[in-house]
Image 1 (cartoon, rainbow, N blue to C red):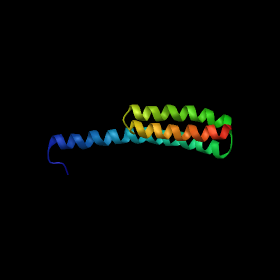
Image 2: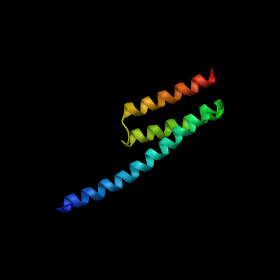
Image 3: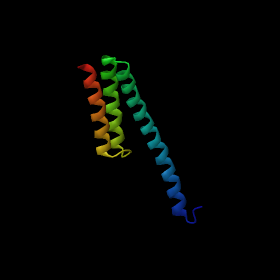
Image 4: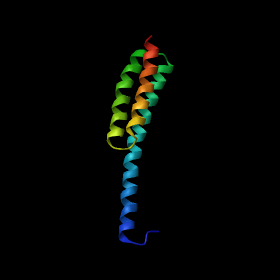
Length: 88
C-alpha cells in the first residue's frame, strides 16, 4: 500500500492510463483480427477495407504511446504483406 500522497496519486494515474491504453490496444487487436480473418477467407475486398481500418488503429496506438513505433510498423508491414499476397 502507498505510504505517501504522491504514491497514492501515482497509483490512481497509472490505473487510469492503463485502462485507456487497454481500450486502444483492444481496438487495435480486433482490427488486426478482422484483416486476418478476411485473408483466411480469401476475401480480398473485405481484407483491403479492414486493412485501412487496422492501419489507422495501429497508427493511433503508436501516436498515443501504447506501442512502440517499430512495433506498429512491423504489424502494418505484416498485414500489408498478407493482403498483397492474397491479391496476387
